Length: 307
Length: 306
Image (cartoon, rainbow over all chains, first blue to last red; front, side, top):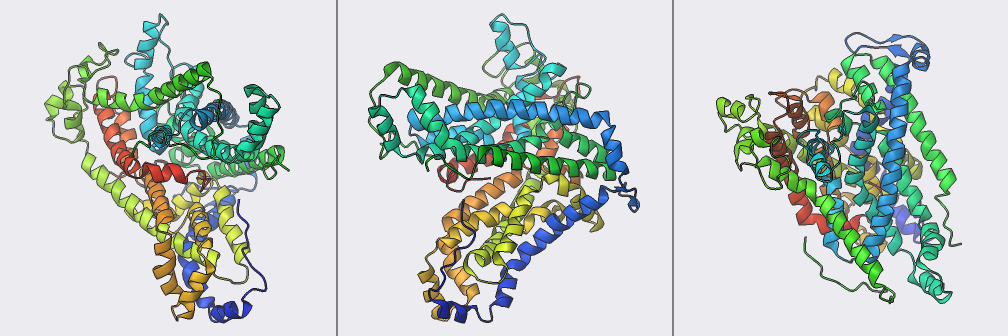
């Protein structure tokens, strides 16, 4: 991405040290507001969240330390494991489909059009609120009045209970979010495609390589760093699905769509079990960090294949 | 957004015209556009429909029994009797109130976050001090913390401060900075030629003056982009306002929409009213997007992550 230090050693040292002298209070001035935000709403809550996970806390009275009880409870909590499983299935479908669609779309945007308007249209769903997107699709996929089932009927297919069928509810929600995110992801990939030097393809053309060979041998390997970055971002985001579930199925039918975010939300704000909810948040945090780390390792995102 | 008609892209290699492939690509693009745009049309179509006939006429691609009833219910213009007759809940929906709340929160967050993040980005990009890079790494590491992990303690904090159900409570956590905003602006500030600022500083302008008179104006474009992104994100936020802003007096649009959807006056939601409200909630963002879309589209990829 960028290098952290932009120091140019040796150059103009005298000038900069002159400017620098007496700047400490200025540095403080510039950093103060952001630091308040960082400490008050990121660092301190992170520490406090970790602490709360070792307590029994219902917000109304002071937290009582309970040691590892919350973590022990978690091991035997079927609903927790269910929420983890549901979330995993969601992430696999969401990311799997979204990445393929996004790469195809990026290729189309790269090769079949140069219109900013088309790119803008592709990006549009991403800027509409999750809640709005969820509600529109909730209506369009409704069993009785939804246009999608109407279209299926025209094709001679029986209506489908997209949200009511426990087997279909998670894939349905995953696809709704593919609709919202695919265009945005495609534009990130598109930027990667534009960075590929055309001469690489010219060389391949001279060697008589076909389209398929060029895609798998050139495009995909050269895209790997950007794909890795995109995947780390989208997977992390995908694990945190909440809005769409909250306004459509709210966890149902039964617990078929009770994703981990929703489970934590229900525990904390429904049952006022803040201690246990914090413990699950800690686990989710560690899980996300682990997944991100694995992806970076596996995809070797910091290296390109050009060297 | 303007149509940039077939602008030749520099450096594009000449291709053999493979007709079948080109046609296929065009068809695929057309499908993509239709799938993307159709839900927006469907909101419009349903909002102008009469709720009572939606079920019977579900396949009608035009509004069924065209009426403004849905919008009237959203704006609280319909009488209770009319609303109930058309499948509404009869309860008043204070759309303007929710719109005002969303606007207040989004403006607060955008103004605070962009300005304070710019200050921090300036320090990280242009000032030298001990531990600068380490401190920047700490700011960046906050990017990795999932929202829910800080949401619970932040809720507790806002509650302790007595700020539940206030605009301040909704805005505060993102008011001072986000790691992304600092990261984003720092990149641009670093690229301002050093000589420019040296000249200003040698002329006796202080750092603060240089920040306001040189760095901010010269970075107007990326700052605008960031402000637009921040505004949209804040406008669309649902999770945090749901936690701290349930009260009707500060309830934002997204939370209100979810509440509206859960009201099922006559067995099913008031679809026409709901789609009308949903569309209206999205319209300001769509306008912003249409006005500045080109800039946003082009900034993605340069700015990278969001």
